[in-house]
Image (cartoon, rainbow, N blue to C red; front, side, top):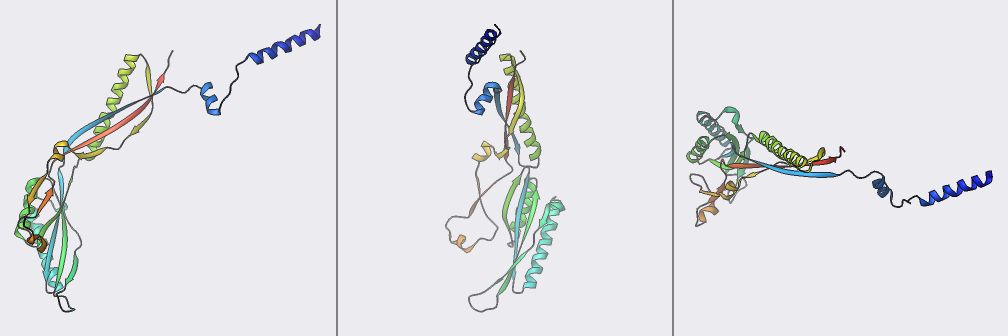
Length: 258
């Protein structure tokens, strides 16, 4: 009797084992079956802000040439001192006027081993914040053949604030969409990750369309330029509009409270 009960229990257990579903597959597939993947949605949004470049760095070259090196260095120093004083009188602050180290180069004639003269070149970098100051620098260049404007860079002094603002606005748009989907679809979203793309600074559409060409006057030009039939021209920037744009992407997990 006992033997029959034991055999019956074994048959029942064997039947249950055979009836259970068989799990096959790779470890990652079994893991997804036992632990279902979380439902993730991604909301992405961008923001833009416009501002005006309010600072320019003007590079001025001061070139003097004399028969003796000492005379050329002295003349260059005196000219720089006069320019420095003129810039102060025009309203430019002392800390916005920077002078780089000068360079010298001997000038040789067609014949002879000794240089005919010595050329000294010094660069001044001047920070300006309005067109009146730019006009003062242009006047100095026009009145001195030794002075030329070599380069201009424009900056926006509130760049950090604008970058933070566009990121904040982009994130606010993302969170606004989150609230909209939660109310509309009757669900709850939990932020789990985000991607903060770099802020891009560029000229606005209007600024990019503007190309200002001016004729250079009152400055020395190379001999090759004199032979040209058309006057020398250069493309310049101005205190114009700049645009900041940022994109933020946030991953949300769909939370099931039920």
